[in-house]
Length: 277
Image (cartoon, rainbow, N blue to C red):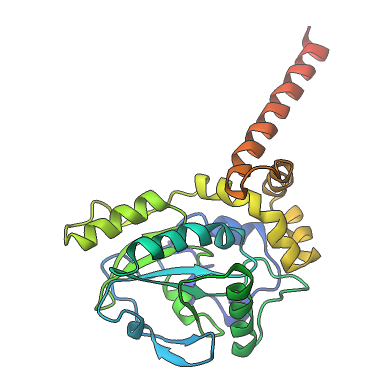
């Protein structure tokens, strides 16, 4: 059965949630059957530039394949993906147009709440562009996320569509570089794709762990509190990762996970020695 928490099954209020929950985070771990599937057409929705100009989605293609990356200011995975998306833009920008689609806030807080108007959403997109100096274009979805819902409302997914709007490939994460580059290479060579989607998520989550603490601080204290309630192990991973401040952010998550697993193993051994020997 399609997941009722995805896409067009949602009310506008549910789409623009004020608080993150464990259920929402679990929904983000797999594509549902409600979004546009590979081989189907992504509708030519209205979108907006950070200057407020209205465009049609297909206008962004300009005769090239179009890679749509979803994201928001309060999404650690979005922030962690900016360097890799920028690298793709530098290497392949002459062959494919790469655009970030600003969607709903992944972890709204007091400082960056869920937008209640298109103007607020555009303001958040401008803030993302200013703070992180993105070189690839940013467009803004409608306030109720028409395009985002069609793409299955993942927080930082990547969708490759052709000049006619057909979805060729999709990935749960925009940092799944190997899958994205393979798909883009096949398209440029006019070869058939070996696979049309990737749902790899463990490595992207680890890569984003070093960005979580800072991203939640940008969002506001509420984002920290709600992550503690909804996903304590992930939040503890973010805190442990922050201990490795001397490493690049994208490498901190792996070290944080190793540290947590080591601590758990030592704790289990201590309990065993105390109670069973």
